[in-house]
Image (tube, rainbow, N blue to C red; front, side, top):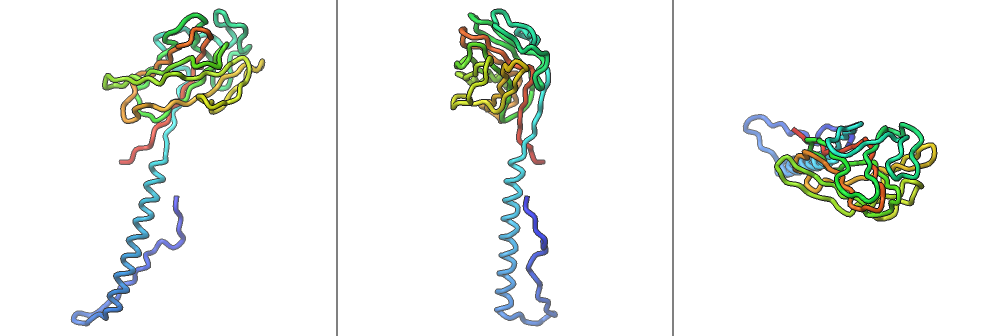
Length: 222
């Protein structure tokens, strides 16, 4: 935000007694000073508006409830999984929703009733490195939108970010299995999101979603 040591306006009034005339050059100088002060004030207001528009409110939900899907401990093997995280906690993640190989469908669904710009989630897949997931946004007005073809990285070993759905950060378990943090844009941030559903679309992997989500919304001015 802008800072200025001297915030006093440059304009200095020229005082005249009743009936006295003001010289043209004094009048013109006074008008120029008023114009300069107005332009400076307008520039500061524009800068302040940009600053306010850039403000975000961030909300993190730990262990959200889901009416669908199956959740597992991190130290528990998902059916068909070769290994697990050998610990009950990895960073903020304490459980996982997962769907085994050969299946597709809704993995989990979180009720939010919030306005937001972007949603962050933790995921990974055994036999991953595939476009394995889509996210369904259901809005309070009865409409919906789908973000499909989401690439999910292999969880058994850290992978490069790549260009397809690059992760923001990652967490490693003691045996170096990986959780990746991804971000998805809400297709309609002007609408209130009622539910967010994570859907497995690729049968040839074990897809996992961590039990932590974060969403960011723009601060609104009164």
